[in-house]
Image (cartoon, rainbow, N blue to C red; front, top):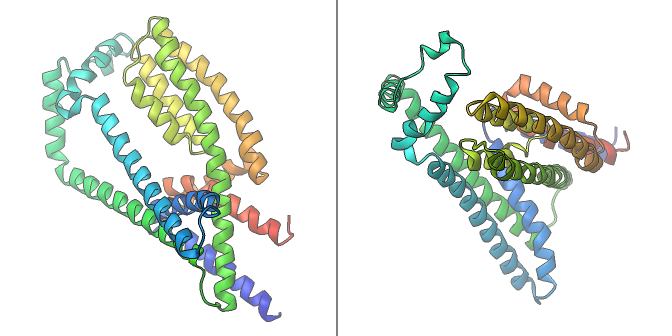
Length: 334
C-alpha cells in the first residue's frame, strides 16, 4: 500500500473517530453551531469580498460577518426562550394557563385519570411547588446542564467564526495528513450545508402551513388551541430533524387540540396526516435530491445512531450519513 493511500485511510479513521466521539462527549451542539457559522460565513463572504481590495479588507469582512452570525444565532436562542416565557405568561401564571386545559380535558379522559387531576389552580400550584421541592437537586442539575449546553453552543459559534477567518487567511504549507484531514472537514461542512439547508426549506414549508392552520383556520372554525404560537416555533425547530421532527410536532399539536375538543383533535389529525404526506414528498425531492438518499436510508441511520447515542444520534444521523455518502462518492465507491 502506497503512502498516499495510508494517509487517506488514517484521515478517514481519525475524522470518523472524532465525529463519533462528539456524541458521547456531548459536543454535538458545539459541532453543529460551529458548522453553521462556518457555512454561513463561507457562503456570504465571497459575495462581499470582491468589492474590497486587499486581503486585510477581506479578513475584516469575514470577521464582521462571523460576529453578526454569532450574534444573530444567540439572539434567536434568547428570543425563543423569551417567546416561550411570554406565551406561558411566566412561571407564576403557568397554573392559571394550564387549568382551563385540564378542565376541558376532564370530559375527554376516563374517571380513573380525572380523579387524579387538580381541582383548582391553587391546588395545581401547590402540587408543582411540592414536586419542585422533592426534585430540587434534579432541577438544579438540569439548569446547570442547560447553561452548559448554551455555553458549548456559544463556544462552537466562536470557533466556527475563527475557523472561517483562518480559512480566509490561508496557512503555511501543511503536511499530507493535515491536508487530508482538512479535506475531510471540508466535505463534512459541505454535507452539513446540503442536509441542513435542504431540511430548513422543508421545515419552513411545514411551519408556514402549520401557522396558517393553528392561527387562522382553527380560530375561524371556532377552535382556539392553547400555546399556538409556541407550537409554531416548536414545529420549525424540531422540523429541522428529518421525519422524526414532524412526528414530534404532530403529537404536540394533536394533544393541544384534544384539550379543546375531540372534533378539534380529529380536524388537527386529518390536517397533520396530509402535511405528513407532503413532508415525505419534500424529503424525497429536496433532501433525497441533495444527498441522493431515500427516506428509509435516513430513518435507518437515525435508528442505528439513536440506539448507540440516544437523541444526539438522531440529530447527528442525517449530517453524518450525508457526509458518509459524500466521501464514498468521492472515492468512486457509489
